[in-house]
Image 1: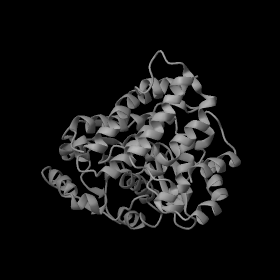
Image 2: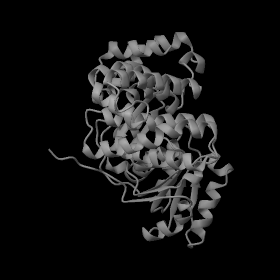
Image 3: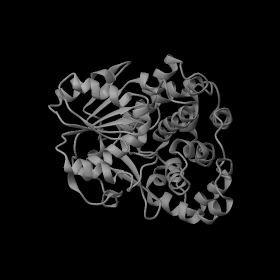
Length: 385
């Protein structure tokens, strides 16, 4: 049996590599970029910096900076119209996962038209939109290296998973120095997101030898450094490790798929506007506890790779240490329960069946070592409260 591995055409990784953006655009034979970003990137001066680097190569660019956290079909529409009306030959996605996911959607819709729902899984989108250069500024989503985007449908609050080579960036520019300004809460949420990507890729039913190598390397980088960057955002060594770990985790899950945590996380984000990494963090301990019986060896090996368990520990002991650590991380990183986040108890429980059906429809739970039905998913949601 063969495994198809999909990667960006080029990965530029290292301190300060974002300064090479003008050279990169020119090497792609592109001259008219549209920068897709958000207001925070404008305030931090990152957009101006990118534009200055482009100007130095005589490249003129325009900016769409109205992306929002957890992008929706409405939030990207103005960007789509801009892409349709301009003579752009490349899109630069600058920011966290939301601007990069928005850039991916704008790339496809701006070239081929239609509605985002037309491109929702199980459709596999292999059409090539406008080429994308992804410049992440958080260590979390790994979106710079994945063939996935997630856009919420405003009409029904469904987070739509969209998959295919068409959403894969052509170039990923991974500069950890851009993460030095990220505040602790976002650092925690995106960091747990990256760790979840690596762990789920490793235990996924679609895991393969290649994705395992990336997932293991990512877990080794992420697990020891997550607390460090939360407690000291200026720790450059830890920031660099988290950034590389995030990209490797993105490569891992893009080539193996995520599982139940992500399937259950998307409805929480869509219905209650919980940041994606934070909803993953809420779910990770409970879903892991549910899943361990079907993959004891895999989870135990993950615990050993992360430095949580010793090589001499039995699988049972290693998995208990893994569970203890996941709960401990959530306590230290101040991950709230749904109630602590401010979600109405009535609304949370009224929507249990909707959340379960949306989770199953995403396809991700089918990749889990222990595949749940709707009733099992509902019980896990209840545990979170």
